[in-house]
Image (cartoon, rainbow, N blue to C red; front, side, top):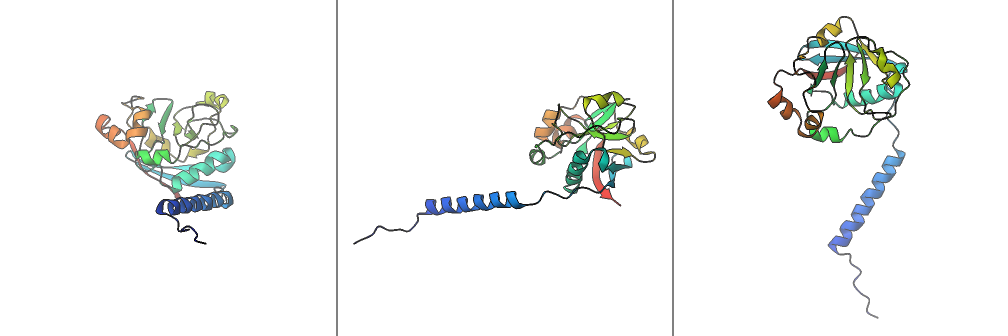
Length: 208
């Protein structure tokens, strides 16, 4: 008997290869261990256009947030971030990358931490849009904002020494004018073109 040609066509071969790649990716995702937790306490150096300051992160204050921040900093997420919200006697806020493609990599929210440390001056916490919506945006409390405690904002660290004085040297003239949506989608070009005096985080690194 004469049998038909069993050779795979090019499109069939591509489909087989794609299925194999997807299967391997699924196995890797299912078997890869989660990232290790961050240290119990660790320091972060913020080098900014207004000077430098150090934040000590205490994992016990907000372990989910601390571990997530550890991953973000190790990926250099906060480098060249504009401080897009500066409200006197309240907060300064940052945490939107100036590169839109990077923002798209960090859209999965993390679960909330219980609030165990109050939002006093010099503490840092994640901004959010409601329960379990924290991603990358952070704010620094400029005053006693303990009223935020009952709203679920859980500080994870505190500025050391006189570092808050550096934060107060940020440019406050634009207030809350920068559009978070435009910054997310356009990047730092939007900030440079419209808010030339804005303050920036140059680099954010973990230090001993």
